[in-house]
Amino acid sequence: MENRPIYLDCNATTPVEPLVCDKVCHFLGEEMGNAASRTHVWGTKAKQAVQAARQQVAEVVKAKNDEVIFTSGATESNNIALLGLAEHGEASGKKHLITTPIEHKSVLEPLSILQERGFEISYVPVGEKGWVDPAELKKHLRDDTLAVSVMHVNNETGVIQPIGQIAEVLNDHPAYFHVDAAQGFGKEIDPLQNSRIDMISVSGHKIFGPKGIGALIVRRRGFKRIPLQPIMFGGGHERGLRPGTLPVPLISGLGEAARLALISHKEREQKCLVMRKEAMEALIAIGGIINGDNEKVMPHVLNISFPGLDSEAALVALKDLVAISNGSACTSQNYEPSHVLEGMNLSEGRIQSALRISWCHMTPKVDWSEVVSAINNVR
Ligand code: PMP
Image (cartoon, rainbow, N blue to C red; front, side, top):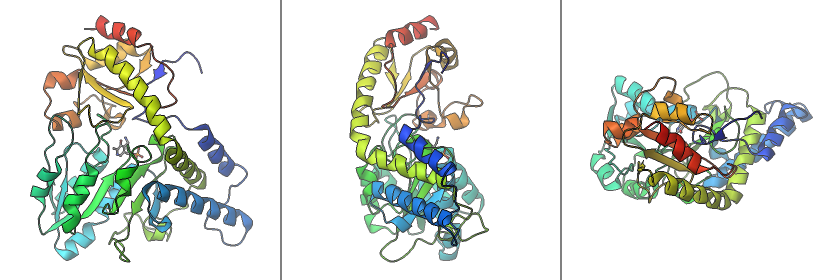
């Protein structure tokens, strides 16, 4: 590749593992069948590939194969999980949902749509540490609470939410528990294996897999399926919940990415931790203030503010050196103050000077002294 800066924006999207690329190409080329074709070997091979991938995704969270619904990504999974419950909520008179102000827009916006439809949404406040307090969440539970939606790992700060403790709070409440795990699936394994979590949203391109593929894992409660309705119509694929011809190459790629995540997550984590230590040492020494709880954060993310810095100016100053961001890629077309940092009640100065730096096990070594000089030059 021509002389590019070092890519430090892995929370926006990760590079793809070479073995994943091989899988995708194989099913784009030689094995190009339709998994729904019943009458020939191309169909059989494609169907087998989908089944294998379903199992690989299920294994990460100890779900059953038939609990995995392939979607186009976590945005769609979040939409199905929330909008798909509306009919049941209306029929059962349960029209209250609980979430947090730091969720991804693909959770917050479907919830706004439900609100327009007559549902009530409670937002559990999140403090400066960037995680939701399960005891605080418990206070919002009501008899008519239909669902609770809390993310696994925040995409801007990398802060890990106490999913296990929230599951415990919900043990004696029937509300459905949805977790947007786009940033944590395949990285932090244990919490998502908790069987109290009813629905888990997954994204391929955050785990070194392809873009345009994801999954919604919908666990059964005993023998009972969750009363989800589809939001698209036109075919019986994916148990009627997500119609459309299955993108076998992408699904195979996601399966391979899930398999690799399960066997390599510890090793990847160790590599990321080394970089976090180096980055922190260099950036705190020039007055950087970490945003979010440094004790409960993923090892590949650093959200850091520099008093007096204009983050947009810093991005420009750093652009030949490192590719970073100052918020979520989904909303970065126009600069708007981060709703996540606002949700954490950080000061305006801290929000405007925040940089999000995120890397992975494939990231080459960074010369942090160069980064430090570039930041100092624009302060
Ligand atoms: N949720 C979170 C927390 C995310 O970080 C993202 C991606 N930025 C999404 C949902 C959406 O995922 P996708 O790109 O697969 O639609």
